[in-house]
View 1 (tube, rainbow, N blue to C red):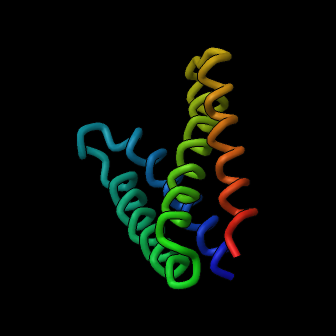
View 2: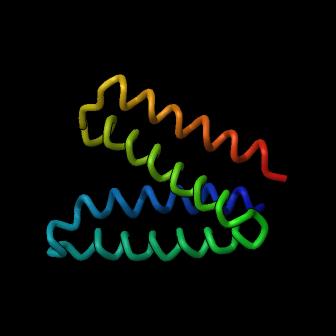
View 3: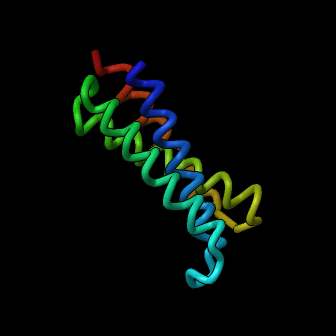
Amino acid sequence: MAWLLLVIAGLEEIVSVIAMKYIDGFKKKTPLIVMTIGIALSFYCLTQAMLVIPAGVAYAVWAGIGSVGITLVSIFWFKEKYNRTQLMFLLCIVIGIIGMKMTTS
């Protein structure tokens, strides 16, 4: 259950960052509300996951999910450009997340 909460926390982090892109200098209220709720849910799920998963592992996985997720959203939704080297290092993050999961009891 803790790992599921950690994944949910990472997904909420992605939602929050997407909402940030639409805030437009805090002029738009809906993205601001989505961002605020997303951050609150993300941190709630992260803290609950940290009750079982060591803090360093949980934080690394949470940050990795957010980094990889928002990069993929940026590529496929926002049509931002990334080069092969950046994508190779993104793969390193994914490998690190898998490694953290596999080596945590």
